[in-house]
Each structure stands twice: as structure tokens, then as C-alpha cells.
Length: 111
Image (tube, rainbow, N blue to C red; front, side, top):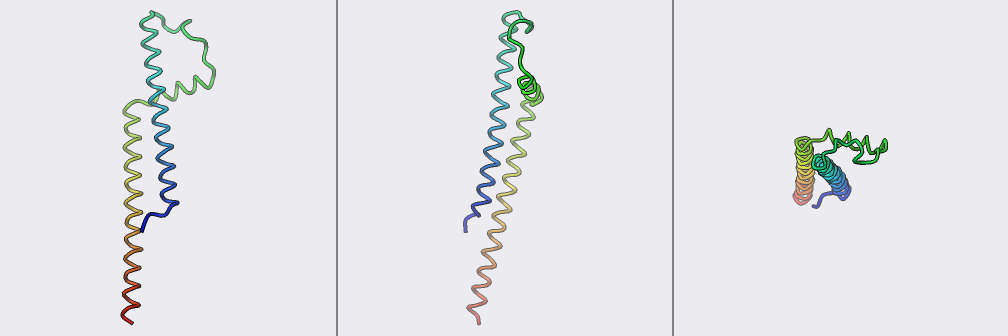
């Protein structure tokens, strides 16, 4: 018996949202590293290299700066562990349902 579609849908949504967050953090980190290297090559310390960022950009950069590669990997491992646990739980529930169904069918055959 396949997994319920709602379980699969919620797992797919969780998977997609986490992948988007990881991708965005990775690309933003790459972009920040690129700008840092570019400023270092040009001899700037950022004084007039770029226009003043807006508040949203400052918040975005600050949040990205706090996410290191280790943090990203930790998030990936946590997600994989959570997904594995949910899959195991769903498989166990399916096995229990199948077992009960067989018991019910065998019980009705014996009568």
C-alpha cells in the first residue's frame, strides 16, 4: 500500500523549502565572497566601491554571514535525519495497517 498522498505532499514541500533555503544561502555566500575578493584586488575597503545597500539588503547580508558552511551542512544532515525518520514512521504505519488487514482477512476466513 503506497504512502498517503498528504504525507508525500508534506514531505515534498518540506524538501523543496529546505532546498531553496540551502540554495539561497549558498549563492548569497558565494556572492559575498566574490565581492570581498573583488574589493581586495581593487585595494578598496568598501568605502566607495558599492552604493549604500538598503535595509533589506543589510539584513539579508547579515543573516547570510551568520550561516557558515558547517551550519549549512548541519541543516542538511538534520533535514535528512528528519526525512528518514518520517519515511520510517510512514513505512511502519503501512506495515501495521497491512498486518491488521491480513489478520482481519484471516479471521473472517476462519469463521
